Length: 137
Image (cartoon, rainbow, N blue to C red; front, side, top):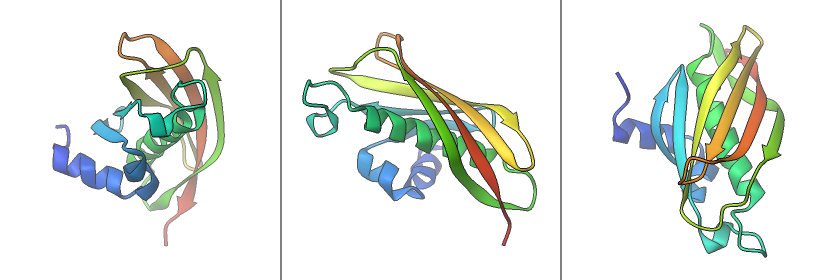
């Protein structure tokens, strides 16, 4: 059963930067985390495209949630150790949707692939990140 909107907002609010950025989590399960980010002038480059840093923050946030939802028993959390982003196209209006899915869920690392798509479903960016599994405390 998918978490309700209030639970998704609470999950997002555990990441103050993601909340300040305006990220919305629309679905979250161990198999898939989905979120959106609207184009806004404050998030744009000098050329008017959605800033790559905003896209990477979206991917890192959703990837972190995906990793958290896949933590092994007794783990204390996760931390991004590497992130590789490939940008395909610019976004100058509308909303992007990101979908994060685990590629590997191990005892010491979790690898997540996040695809970011524009309102027409076209691939904007693909991000592969590795999350370290932190010891429980």
